[in-house]
Image 1: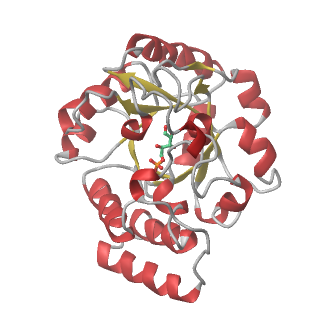
Image 2 (image 1 turned 90 degrees about the vertical axis):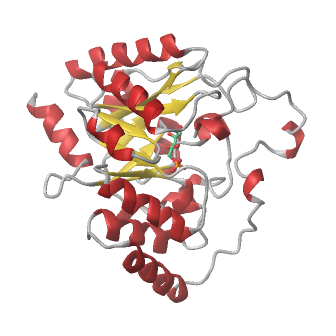
Length: 296
Ligand code: R5P
C-alpha cells in the first residue's frame, strides 16, 4: 500500500487499536435540513473533539466546520438525488478529486446501491473513483445503501460489502444485522457500521457493541448521536465501547451520568416515523422508487 494511502487510512482507523469513531453529518446531501442537523455548525461544533473523523459534504465543511480544527475529513463525493426525487440510487460522483484534495480530505465516501435500479451506475462510479483517488493516495469508503426490495440480512449485506471491496473500496460502511460476523468475515477490507434511524440510546449502544464484537472496526454514526437529547454524552458512550472496550452497561451508565450533568437540549423532537421526512409542503409528493429512509 502506498505511504500516503496508508497514512490517510491511519487517520481514520486508529492503528493503535484498529478502531474508528466517525461522525456522520452528510445526510443533508439528499435530505436537506433534517432534524437536529438544520444548523450543521451548531450540531457539529460540540461533537468535533470526540470523533476520530468527520463524514461531511464539501458545502457543510466549507461553511460550518472550523478549518483550524485538525479533524480528518471523510468527504461525501456522490449525490445528485433528493428524498423527493425519482430514485435515490441514481447517484453520480459530484465532487472532483482535485476539490477533495483542496479541502484536505483524508478519504472519499460514496454510495453504491446493490439491487437498486441504478446498481450498475453506482458500482461503476465506485470503480472509477478508486481509479482516480488511488493516483493521489486517497482511500475510498463505500457506503452500501439498501435497495427498497432488499432484505436487510447478512446475505444481502455480505453481497453488497463484498462487491464494494472487490471494486477496490478501502473501507466499507454498512448496517448491523443478525449474523454480522458473516458480513465482516467475507469482506476483505475493514467494515464500519452506520447507526441508522434514531433508536433509544441503550439500543444504539447495544448495536455498537455487537458490531464491534462481530468484527466491525467502528462506527460511522450520525442520527443516533446528534438526534439524541444529549449528543455529547452519546458520542462519549459510543467512544467508550469502540475505544475503551466498555460493555453496554458501562457505556449506558456513562451516557446516563453525562446526560444528568449536561442540561437537555430544548429542540422539540418529531415522532420517530416523521424523522428525516421532507418539510410539510413536500409531504404530498409522490413516493420514491427507492426510499432512502429505508435505505439508510
Ligand atoms: C447515508 O447515506 C449517510 O452517508 C449517513 O452518513 C449514514 O447513513 C450514517 O448515518 P446514520 O448513523 O445516521 O445512519
